[in-house]
Amino acid sequence: MSGKPKLHYFNGRGRMESIRWLLAAAGVEVCLYGSLLFQQVPMVEIDGMKMVQSRAIGNYIAMKYNLYGKDLKERALIDMYVEAVIDLNELLMTHILQPADKKEQHFATIVDKATNRYFPVYEKVLKDHGQDFLVGNQFSRADVQLLETLLMAEECKPDILAKFPLLQSFKARISNIPTIKKFLQPGSQRKPPLQEKDLPKVMKIFH
Amino acid sequence: MAGKPKLYYFDGRGKMESIRWLLAAAGVEFEEESLETREQYEKLLQGGSLMFQQVPMVEIDGMKMVQTRAILSYVAAKYNLYGKDLKERALIDMYVGGTDDLMGFILMFPFLSAEDKEKQRAVVVQKAISRYFPAYEKVLKDHGQDFLVGNNFSWADVHLLEAILMVEEKKSDVLSGFPQLQAFKARISSIPTIKKFLEPGSQRKPVPDDKYVETVRRVLHMYYDIKAN
Image (cartoon, rainbow over all chains, first blue to last red; front, side, top):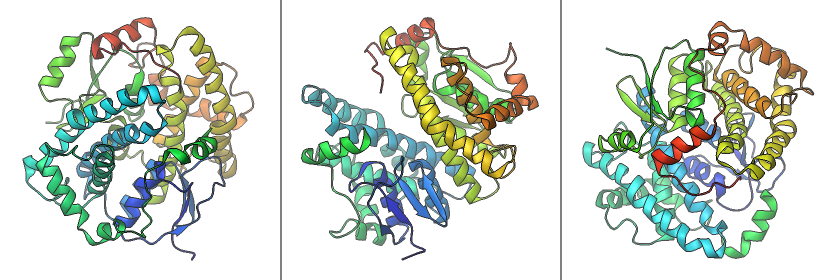
């Protein structure tokens, strides 16, 4: 079991989910620990380090498994695309934490931001270069993280990609990559969305 | 021809401040365009300069870069402030992530009500003293070197100094239990590029005030109340 990265988190998506996606995309087997031992999670034991900070972990995995572009400029593009996706993820993930009287407003914000601020950018990127992947004509973490977000957004509103034909074909294409396809199948380490009933438990852990 | 980087933001700290620090630390001269009016912002939007309709935006090396973290990573890598290998980079990323979280508690300060400001001040100090400062104190104590990572000046050092100074603005004796951090602060502050940045007349921005808040609200049409996290 030693040698495989070890993930420490609660049994849900949160900030660990993007890391699970990246590891899966790179075809890396992981050892699940699932418990909260330290003041900060996510924590990933990898290559003799106990890494915290989801961005640091994501950066390390992306570099190590060649999912970070071929030079500084490609990395810059990947970082821009990934950071924006992280922002949108934050919105999507905090939806369940909204009090009942704020939920509808928050939902409207999510849909507005997704369809007016974020999705049009990625649609345009794909349209402008006509390539299969977001950056440098090569599979990268930007593709992985965008797919993750597209699927989460669809969980929120199933027809949210209606006006984005290129994102729809992107979604199909990236989902078909063998490592991703495997991750999307039942029994993988992908986590389901947080349910309302699990909320009290999660809130207790983080507050 | 590569000109100087140009920063587009409000005339104040916010999310651009860490970028100013890093460029200054690297000895890179930069220009700034301050957003004062809604019209300026809309012009940038319509011109397609703001990828996700947001600032900070930095024109650098032919790119219009957005997303603070992306810009910082690019500058760090370009000016050799990002460690010598993957593992050093990992450490730098972790440390910067921590100081980012800490400074994040201060970011919305100017937008809070007077009452919330007091509460948030206590939160910032408590987090600094109990979670963040001890971690960096230990790193420095354990390796006994001048810099956080790889015995070399890096982004992590710049970012930590920035965070220390910001927290000290909220409580001036906050470093009293942290001798290593006190020495670190003195040491990094006397690096020539940093020293220059800390002098009056540099491009470092002062503590944000009501005028800054007004400007941000006006330019972004951000009139809703901000609550502390």
